[in-house]
Image (tube, rainbow, N blue to C red):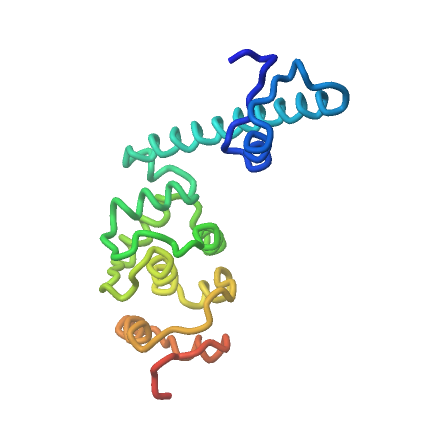
Length: 196
């Protein structure tokens, strides 16, 4: 493309309107402040493209690194490493975090889990089994922390993001000798569908 004849791409909102209203603009026939602003916009869009490409490349590299089990276990917990690990190790109806991956990463770190290996070790140490109670990764990871140490979960990790659990979940904890109703009462959470 001729640099002196920069054509705005349709993927940019305002630029798309310029294309629609005025067509391709030949920078050689734009004068004064409009020409300067046009050049600034072109430079900003080019910079944005470069930064977005760097981000995409970094994500691809991280996903590629996570494909190796040994690499994955040594990775810091973040959205990509966590999703990759859970996809490989749990068969869930909904393989997602319900849009709250940043929140669960923070809860895990508050609990003291910083590497994927920490999660794998915790699962192994407490012989954690989901029993099909939780259907997405968000619930699964919270259950893991609560089974490991319910008091620590509420004291250090719980953010107030959820306000109650149902009878099935309560039964899940009670089967593991966890007095979950005590914690629900202490933290003002509801026990939905349960006679108290």
